[in-house]
Image (cartoon, rainbow over all chains, first blue to last red; front, side, top):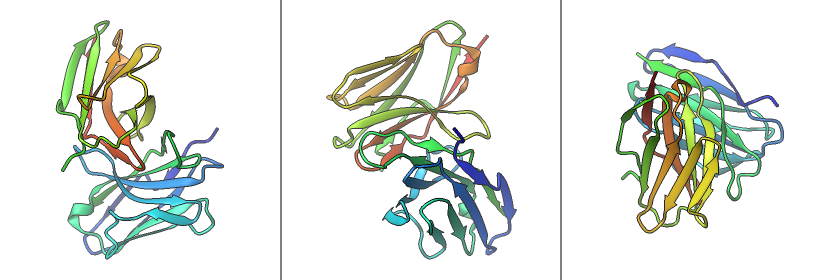
Amino acid sequence: EAGVAQSPRYKIIEKRQSVAFWCNPISGHATLYWYQQILGQGPKLLIQFQNNGVVDDSQLPKDRFSAERLKGVDSTLKIQPAKLEDSAVYLCASSVTGVGNEKLFFGSGTQLSVL
Amino acid sequence: DQQVKQNSPSLSVQEGRISILNCDYTNSMFDYFLWYKKYPAEGPTFLISISSIKDKNEDGRFTVFLNKSAKHLSLHIVPSQPGDSAVYFCAASDRNFVFGPGTRLSVLP
């Protein structure tokens, strides 16, 4: 089966610019996650979708970050305006139901460098 | 406040020997634990998991041990192979997944 697809793989922008990331989860997976992984740290949850509804966005910096999953399939994560501290790998993950003991399937991530 | 800790940033092991990676957690509500492996420029891939109702789960060369009273789990890899060289993340879940900072394992030929 096809895995979680993410694009682009790499992005370099200057501070105060905007950037968008795209994710297509595994077919049939209801739950989609966006994680931020700063160098030397573990992935940190930004937002969780169940179908096209938001389950948890408590750690999303809403003044600059936004995400949507309009048709309950693919998703975009946007940063506007970017700050230096946003430099990180942005990982998308999906799971079948998001309920109970389920593993997450991760994409390869987008490495963002903010200069 | 880190809810999931991996206190060893790195570990080097000789090929064929046992690798033991440790993880500690603070939240007693966590009931599901996973280990992920990450190669450079790739996303984390699932390795093995354990439910809080068990104290051991084994899958081939990989065994995870859970000590709930100590809030501690460990991943044993026997025998270690050069292809096991990667960053290993411990993750814990009650409703959401919380990841540790990772341990970089190097298996030397």
